[in-house]
Amino acid sequence: MISVLSGGVGAARLLSALSRVLEPSEITAIVNVGDDLVLHGLTICPDLDTISYTLAGLNNDEAGWGLRGESWRVMDELSELGGAAWFRLGDRDLATHLYRSQRISEGATKSDVTRELCQRWGVQVRLLPVTNDTVATEFDTPLGRLSFQQYFVEHHHDVVVSGIEVVGADTAHAAPDVLETLRECSRIVIAPSNPLISIDPILQVPGVREVLARRRDDVVAVSPIISGAALKGPADRLLAELGHDVSCVGVADYYEGLIGTFIIDQADADLRDVISARGVKVEVTTTVMADPDDALRLARVVLA
Ligand code: FO1
Image 1 (cartoon, helix red, strand yellow):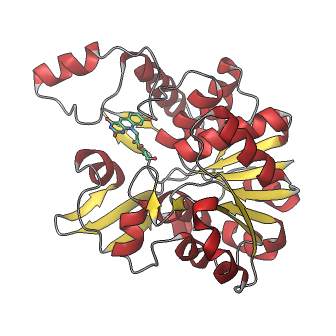
Image 2 (image 1 turned 45 degrees about the vertical axis):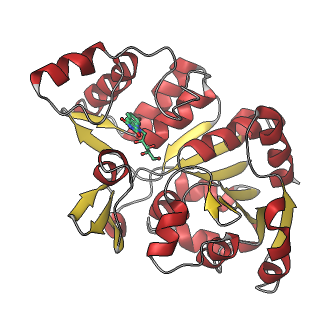
């Protein structure tokens, strides 16, 4: 059984490929909840939803989030009313948030709701939110403190960040089975998700970082940075703004003491020795998951 620390799109694609090599029930995704928000009174969990929609074959591949074949009648009406329509919730996607919010109001946890939704959609990979407590990733910017989705969606991650805080992480409790699974699995994979805003909020939940440090030789990370740039999202920009090297070396350093093996793209093959010198094994392959075959090749390297 393997565990995969997971953010959104990059993790979803890797999990999908891993589940073509391993029995899906042998894979547990431990998922970031720092992007979660309450909007219109609804609890929305973007990373959990991106992963479950992808594994169920329901995701909108082009956007990287939401459902395919979506319609937007509710958002259109909401715009007419002058409501908050900057965070687009499709008509079908809304059903997920309504279901989750109602179940939470009845006393269910995010873990419970995730299990119920995955069962309904036939998703056999086990998805565990890293915590059921409220943790919220926030950004210090010249515009003031911004919530995750204000920064990411409302401002298109086009604002300078001077600090990131995962509010609530220090007092959060890992959700049931998270630490046990991390302790007992044969391998821990860090998906090619944003290290600062997708993986770090998972590592900050008490107990998680400690297990990885103890099991370092069994931890394999995939670099989300190729030739000094992120394929999607603000990872490169955030690394620079927060004083890290904008390269796969910068990511390896960010995970210092936590990883035994680092997988980098062939475009960065010349950096192999720099990373090896830090006492980390390096594998070089194609890490871009442009199509399912590329993703499958990467999954085989992750499991090798
Ligand atoms: N991303 C956007 O860029 N624009 C949106 O309007 C948007 C809506 C949205 C609704 C539900 C959901 O689960 C995700 C959504 N996302 C949207 C994606 C998203 O919030 C980010 O990509 C992640 O939080 C970063 O991993």
